[in-house]
Amino acid sequence: MPELPEVETIKNELIPHVVGHCVTGVTLFWEGIVRQPSVEEFRSRLVGQRITGISRRGKYLIFSLSSEEKLIVHLRMTGSLLLKPAPAEPERFIRAILCLDDETAIHFRDLRKFGRMWLTKDENDVLPELGPEPLQADFTPQVLAKLLKNRTAPIKALLIEQNLIAGIGNMYADETLFASGIHPLRPGGSLSPAEVKRLHKAIQQILHLAIGNKGASVDTYFRPGGETGTAHYQFKVAHRLGGDRCPVCGIPIERIAVRNRGTYFCTKCQPWKG
Ligand SMILES: [Zn+2]
Image (cartoon, rainbow, N blue to C red):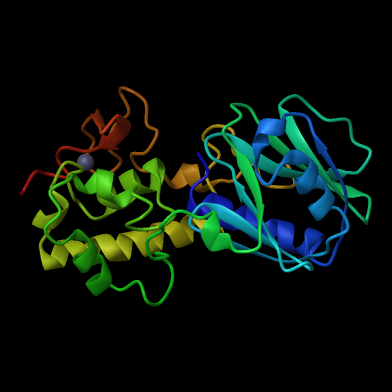
């Protein structure tokens, strides 16, 4: 699933091609992709609008339009936004195409059909409650400590709660816990101030590194030009298969389920100290 580094990469790589251009046509191959407003209104309100900017909040992409409306896109599990020449034949799993005035088009490819689009005057009507952005300056170790205070849920489960911290998902939660030597089942509130500080540093370092590597292509994630990202080559534990060994100490990596999410960690490098 695209997480913060993947969505940030998509935003960065769409901006130079898309911002300043007008939407000249909207084709929907699966109407369920539009959540708001009706499909007819979505099409008529979007066509003719110039895209004036793209931003990201958590795992959401927000396209600003000249009408002052926002086009909000969530890629969910398997969505990609691919830039293609306008007359390109849609490949398999293309659910929507937005044609632009320079004869290019954005193809919304989505194998599992969980991706969604909304058109709204106020993004706050669409976005759920989201925690702080972990790469912004106001996300300090003190802020993280406050978010985790008295929490009894496993730290792994807390890291991927979007209303606590925006943008971290399964892969980067496993990687940050490994980098900070914290067992994924430790209750969030049991972390010492030193551990919170280590975790905070790991979150920022690992997300920055992954953005630098243009995201992780472990499954269906592609960049807008169709290229893969290389962030997963840096993964120490996330998405490791049975039998893989910890790159630090050499013992086999464990896989457990935390609230139904596959969680990879090293029992030696991430001991239970709670
Ligand atoms: Zn280890």
